[in-house]
Length: 443
Ligand code: GAP
Image 1 (cartoon, rainbow, N blue to C red):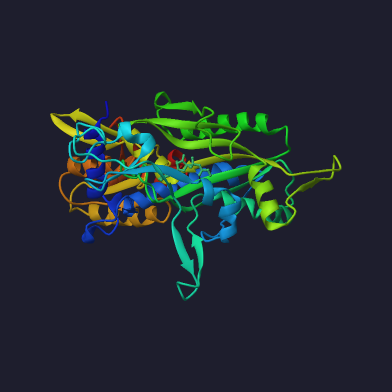
Image 2: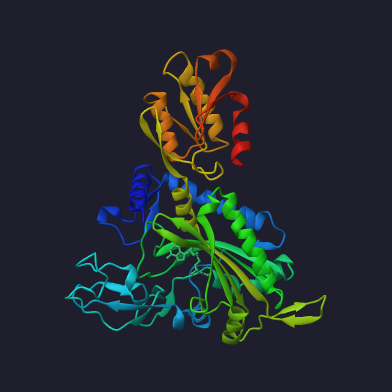
């Protein structure tokens, strides 16, 4: 059963605390497009930074890239997206709603939500038609004569068309990878579930170039590495699983594919795909561009077009996963405490700094400490209301440590550190605090 209450609570918390807002809200919102507020932008950035660190900085065999969103229109013909990146759609002539033909059984009839489209007496569904998911736009000043170009529906193609450029500049040798984080756009027919499926989103993709024949082994290695990354993000392993694509599910470019799925309140769903794309993309670009895209292996004195193992995660989807996984409610002293129990490395704010009371020099000490801390880790100063209330506000924001300056601080220079999850307290010397926090957050 879908736990819609939990999603409703999360969406409302995200708006209230400044994680995620609907795009263009004052105009009624734009369907399935979302903006990240002050806490959300930090959370998503931390997710992306952890990915970049693991995939680029920590490895000798992967280089980074930032390719443009707009690409030559022939890229999308060669990649197969113009012809094949489609969903089958049906329209209801009565209510004018549009549904994915292959998802009718998951959809509700707008006229009678207890029924599926087509089941109500007045429904009149059309035959399925193929609908391309790419957004089109025009390049050049005059719309009629301008070239039609597309907003990229995946970041991967920017990597394929640049792989020889990267190879030359970096002195890498096959096997090696190219990683990229960037926006992608899809005119999804059934977007929804908050930031799970949106029309504008960010991908964290890595394409690993290998010798044909070595692909199956690298595919297995990358599966293991990527699942390990999600575990290291602090996600509950019991809520993660593999889904292997059957022959009917495989994308047009894939020989083998596994999804990493997470158990959301609305069911198990994909957060990352690992694909064996073979030499499909490079062969297609080689044929369409007329440029050789093969690789010369000096040691073996042979040429080949590399096979590609792709790892493709959605930054927004992983961010949603961290929010869902972290959300919990607990009863504390007769009150409900809402906590976002993020792994400290992705928490948007690492430390809340409070003076116990607004007198006796405590605010001055706390302000100095806060400014010093803020230069090193994201911190937040709060002196309003009872300390218990300030803890609750930080719990909701997912802040792992709350620092209180009290009477003892003025005598011996130590502060109270309260831990978000266990709610226990330590005393730490104020002048060692930044290092103490960084040790625990990996900053
Ligand atoms: N380059 C391969 C590729 O794009 P995909 O399975 O279509 O494969 C990869 O997408 C990942 O991108 C998904 O696992 C998901 O995390 C994210 N993603 C795809 N479509 C999305 C959407 N409409 N909204 C948010 N994230 C999306």
